[in-house]
Image (tube, rainbow, N blue to C red):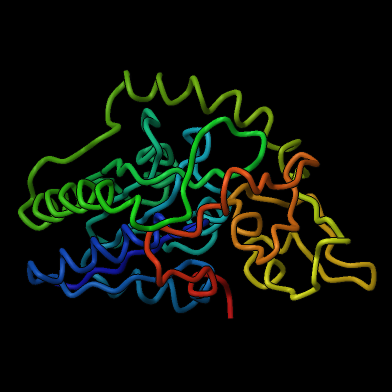
Length: 276
């Protein structure tokens, strides 16, 4: 059996889960590959989905909703189902209602039925100054959380391979609870897309934020890096700017709270996700 897992990851959490899941499936006899939807061309992705026995989709939840890049991938790139099995998983801090199944109707319209779904808790990656939540840039702090999530991923992989029930987020109650977050989030999302800016005095013009932005929101100009109002809220540019020049809602990073979140493990680099 073969499997392809398509994932979108802002700052590395979903990337880590996708690769951990691939290892767990491989150990159970399912040959699995992971593809960042930013790096895989539309034709290649469609061919991979058609040729695999099993397809997985993974994303971080924002306000109990899918990130815009994953919505576009499903709507425009994922081919209609042809008898393959499908599983979905989402990464979250605490709770998302039906975060792993929020796009169930849209997938069903393309012939896909979600056979298994999982909610995976990961470290907090929201490091913006306006957030009251704590975070850490030290991967050692995250080890215990990753161990717990790895065990859940193994149980999920076992269920997928064995055809057992594993459908987190399924049913009317999770859907209702997810909608409580999703409806206000979708209402405010257009305004939130213009909340990223760059401090031109602090910026060194290294261009990293431009290269790793998944939506083309940032551009290098003679006056420095400017934002175009097309942010997808992944906070990748904010977290991985080498000099913390990126601002959110006009506020700079607060250095007294420590460096922004830099992924769940020491060797993660956001360039592994972005288009080449």
